[in-house]
Length: 270
Image (cartoon, rainbow, N blue to C red; front, side, top):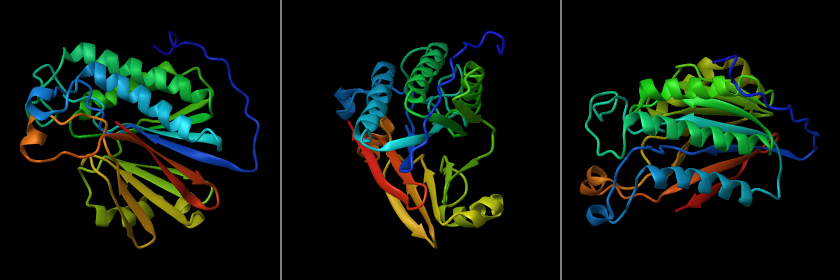
C-alpha cells in the first residue's frame, strides 16, 4: 500500500505575518445512517451525508477566504461511519437503521475524506488527527490508517492516527485538544490536558478542547480551558426523533490566531 500510494507534488508556502490556523471538524457524519422524512421530517442517507461534507467544508473555506491561513487542523474520526460490522450495529452491538452495504459505505467515506483533504492541501498544509468513537471504533481506525497511507508521499500533510482517545495540537500560543466525548467527563478534560501535554501546556495560554458525540452545541470555560461540543450534519433518525433530540445540523470550523487564540467560530448550517 505504501508503494502504491499516489505521488503528490510538494507545494511551497510563503509565510505571512498575519496567519491563522483553520480548524475544520466535520463531526459525527454517520455515513450509512438512514432517516426518512416520512417518519422524522428529516431525510438522511449516504448520498446526503457525502454531499453535506463537501458542501460544509467548502462553505467554511468560503467564509474564511479573507483570512491568511498557514495551517489547517482537520479533525477526523468521530463516528464518520454509523456502524462497525456487517450486522448493522455499532461497536457495542446497538442496532442501527442503515443505508447501503457496509463495504460500499466504507469506500464512500474513504473517497469523501480523500477528496476533502486534497482540496484543503491547496489552501494550506494540513495536520489530520483521528478521534476514536463509539459507533465505529474499529472501522473508523482502519479508515484513518488507510487515508494516512494514501497520502504517504505527500509532504504537505501530517497525521496523528493513533488509537489514543485524546489528541492535542499546538499552534503558537494555542493548545488544542480533541476527543469524541463518550469517555472522560468534561470537568476532567482540563486536568488531563495539563497532565498529558506538560511541555505544550507550559508554552501556551489559549487552550481549547473540541468534543463531539452529543450532536449539539455547548461551550463552557473550566478554569482557563474552553470546552466546546460540535454540531453534526447527520439527519434525525427514528431513535433521536422519538426521544426528542432534534439539534441544528451543521459542519463547524474555527479560526485561531497564533497570539490571540480562537478569534472566530464558523458554522455551515443545513
